Length: 292
Image (tube, rainbow, N blue to C red; front, side, top):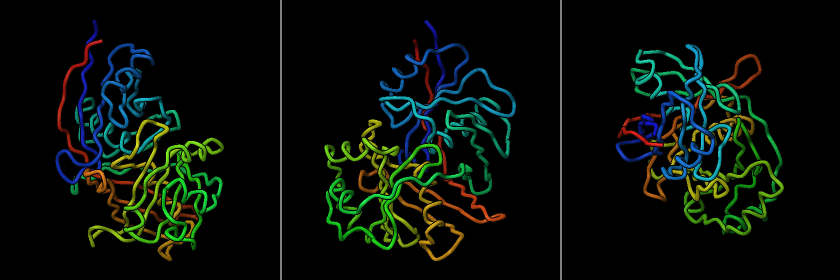
């Protein structure tokens, strides 16, 4: 019997037991893919991460599993795992960490003064543009609730998502995924997740309200999604949603499922390219041992 040490953190939290919970397993020996998948299924968080023992001082290999399957990249696992690596594996006040995911390497930096971790997003790929009527049926809302000044489009920085602009917070609240139509829609798409957003918010200090759905991965609704929000940041800049090539935004998520989360989006141009960072707070809430 082997014992694995693990920690549980809140990512993008506004307080203990808010945000998106993540279990980070610190592997010191071999664990099979099947065992990782089984652990993730039993933990039953939206994602669970495993820090591999084959690491070097510049980059740490990380695997991410949902309860249903392994995925190449996700945002809150990147920040939560970096937090645990720095505090419990390296145990040094580093300014940056490099993480190696299946989708590629990601750099996480630490703003110690504000206690915010920042993830540098990969260059985006923009995919198919979808018809509003088709997507409205999936979301169980009227087509008139969709903001038609901007496209509904697949965007990916490692994990594709369908970005859907809505006109109001009321429209966001009305969204209810029709599972049959959802699975029919994603058959022909790379993206399996659907993110809706509105510039109307619950709290006036915030700039956007978002909801993210990924039933394909076993996540009916995610309380906080770093990767999808990174895709959204690129989308906002590309289409000048705020009439600017730079953004500095506070994003609220998870309110409809009583898991209020707060994310920060920064984007700016350098030499004709757009850089995007997604930030949030991370708080450790538990630790334990897992026997396999």
